[in-house]
Amino acid sequence: MKKNFLYQTLSFFLLQYLLFASAALLPDATTPSVHNVSRDRELLSGCNMFQGKWVIDTSYPLYQSSSCPFLEPEFDCQKYGRPDKQYLKYSWKPDSCDLPRFDGMEFLRRWRGKKIMFVGDSLSLNQWESLACMIHASVPNSKTSFVKKDSLSAVTFQDYGVSILLYRTPYLVDIQRENIGRVLKLDSIQQGNAWKGMDMLIFNTWHWWTHKGKSQPWDYVQDGSTISKDMDRLLAFYKGLTTWARWVDLNVDPTKTKVFFQGISPTHYQGRDWRSGSKNCYGEQQPLSGSIYPGGTPPEVSIVNKVLSRIKKPVYLLDITTLSQLRKDAHPSAYSGEHSGIDCSHWCLPGLPDTWNQLLYAALVM
Image 1 (cartoon, rainbow, N blue to C red):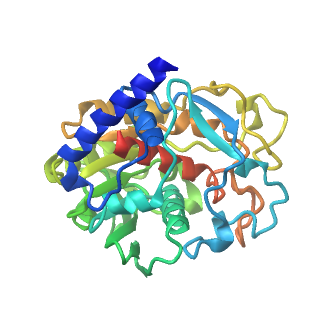
Image 2: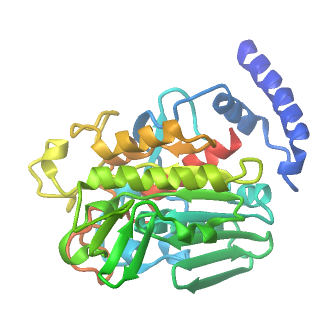
């Protein structure tokens, strides 16, 4: 007990010093309690937040879907008839530390007057709506505004001047309409002009790189001066992501903008991947136990790691793949609004993307 007390006391004074030294980054922040300081110190001392297991937590979910004004039908599984609720009652427990509990008011105080943008496909939409709902639950009476125009959506918490934006672009690189049709340009990122001036950027891409047939939004792919009807999709992903990495190196000032890459979000369309006789995620009500996914790591993860290892500017990888693979129970499946079919690609809200944002929050307070 004496050792624990001494550790907490030393941790308290050390973090007070750190907070004082970085006061400009924490406008109006209140002094954290000794309990929170101790947990934050564990994060500061080093921890793999992405290695762990799912545990039952009766304090979850962090909000109710019925009370979040920003939630779209495709993620509102409870509203559209999902009969079970156990999937809402899990929290992520890293093996080597405790995560700080998400505090929406503290998040707003830290990012007062700032702009945060998610850039990517509908998985970015999933995480963006989750963050907006989590913050709203902390300050339900705060004045908000919502704007949606073309590829850009924004929720602003007006009392704090914090804008949470979403820029929808499935590949990050450009698709341009030309005489021959729609061309996916692996070396062009003109739309990146819309991402400049942000205080935080969270990027994501992968799922659309596998789309073929009617769901493929391009007719040709261009790699340098070579235009073809198709190419190896993993190679195309690597080339497109390399173009994105070059954009970050050329356009991001790390003293003004924090950059994250949301890791590969898995799908659960093949029950054999988790050694089940089930066809897909429909009817799944519990996560996998332990910390290992039987289906292994998908090949696109190694491409993300390869590109990030070569980038010159600091980019933090939210390595959510394995912990999300374990959540075969967390998809909308048949409870996805008016969407037809079984959705084992996106995630219910409240649900798994709330954990992604808790990990984002932990990375920011480390």
